[in-house]
Amino acid sequence: MASLRVIPSLKLSQESREKALGEFKSFHDTIASDLCLETEEKKKLRDDEAKEIIKRTCNVSSCAKVQLLEIDKRSQCLKELKEEGLSTR
Image (tube, rainbow, N blue to C red; front, side, top):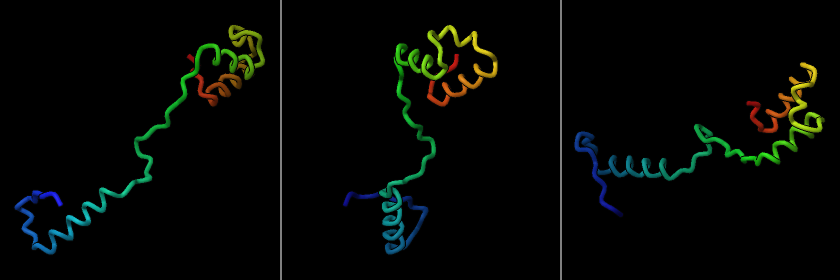
C-alpha cells in the first residue's frame, strides 16, 4: 500500500484513521450512476442528410418550400425537426 499523508490536525487514533481511509477509498472507488453534468453526445448530420430529413418531415420537395407553408403547418414542422435534433437557425 502506498504511503498516504494525513493532515496532522485530524489527530485521529490509528484505528479511526485506518477506518476513515478505508471508507474514503471505498467511496472514491464506487462508480456513480448519477447523470449530473454529463451530456449525451449528439450525432452530427451532414447537410444532405439534414435536407432529406426536412423534405421527409415537412413533406416538401425542397427545403426552401418550408418557408411557404402555412404558419400552423410550418410551426408543427419546425417542432418535429427540433425533436429530430435539427437546428432551426
